[in-house]
Length: 399
Image 1 (spheres, rainbow, N blue to C red):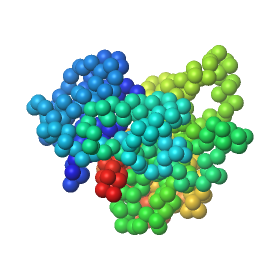
Image 2 (cartoon, helix red, strand yellow):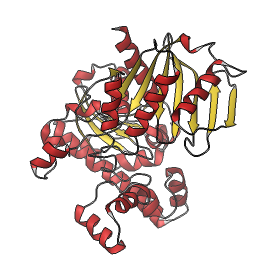
Image 3 (tube, rainbow, N blue to C red):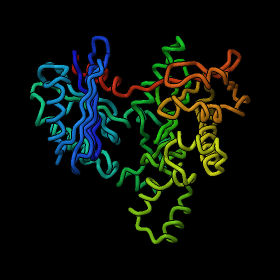
């Protein structure tokens, strides 16, 4: 059974075609610069590649090109779209409406689009992609949407409510939603399997670290708290996002620069974080290289991130009344031995001890990096959101 997984952004459309018989990826690619000019990059499992500039006025033309490269030419992997059993879509914001995957209908697309105010960069783009996909693929092919926020819907009100007047929650749905939920759900389950334990018996702090980062407390397989909030801006320092900041600092800086609310949002989302603190780059690899060369601001950026993660581990240990394991995932979490070491150093009181030799030698693969006598296990767990979306899609259409 073949399932096409789609992750649409405002100007991009990433995809993977997955054979669910063995969960292998037959092909993957990205249609980007949609609405600007257009480009597609496509690669098959056996190494065949295709790159081309295209004309993508909308997501519909991007989907048409996606179908073309999958089914025709030297880079084709199927003969027609009729071979695809279903399409699974990643959706960033489901708010309180969607707490699980569901089949796509015109009403569901309208609801997703209606949540665009809560995720302006993502949800309208998702709706555009859903409508484009519906116009291009066979009408008999079911589509499923999987929501990043759904995993966090198990948070209790004491965790997701803000200290604003309750009417703001009732009227405007202002609350913590959390993000990266699909990733946190995948890696926490994969960790339980690797540990040979039932996830219902585990208390896990999941650290998804990348250009965007979030920390989640997973108790018995359910999210009880997470660092990202109303938007993905909250929480720890990120590539270009500032993370948690005193609200009065926000209004103060906005007044000093003469920013409108939208301009201040751009300032915090696009010009802050690693980039703003270091003055070097938003990429952790550049930050680590600069830090090794003695750049004090780059060192500070790394130290800030590690310190904030340490605080979340401590607070989530308190929230769950214990912790069995800490996991690292995402581009930084899986590949930066330096950040993992910074986070875990000085946490022996929590029972966290890592083997630096194993940590330094491991990148991008499932690996326990804690010492045998560490009371809390520490793991690297590669994430695979696309595979989980495919699994969710298969489960739903099978019913």
